[in-house]
Image (cartoon, rainbow, N blue to C red; front, side):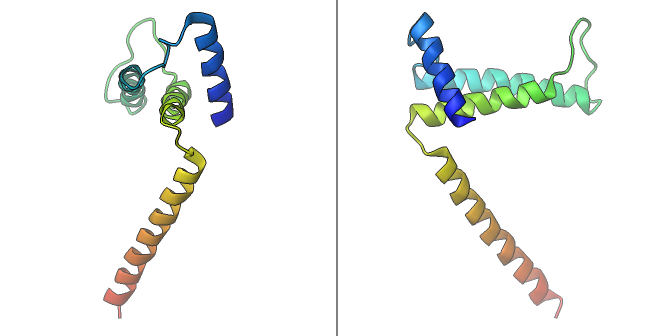
Length: 108
């Protein structure tokens, strides 16, 4: 997915110019834009907001759109996202283990 994102973004930039996802401000603005669509889809899916006439919920698409922009941001900053993900999961597993140990200590 990451390599696809990098390739696609470079192809788009070659066609229309570097202004497309070419700076951090644009990437963050796009992240906020697509996050808003995702939030709307979740609200409709959860029955918290009615579906607007003539629209459909595209929850999977909206999640993928957020991921695309997140991948693009990591590429912009030359972040090894796979490594960052593994680090995050390792930290999260450590936090979970500490929580489980506290619960086990409290049950004795």
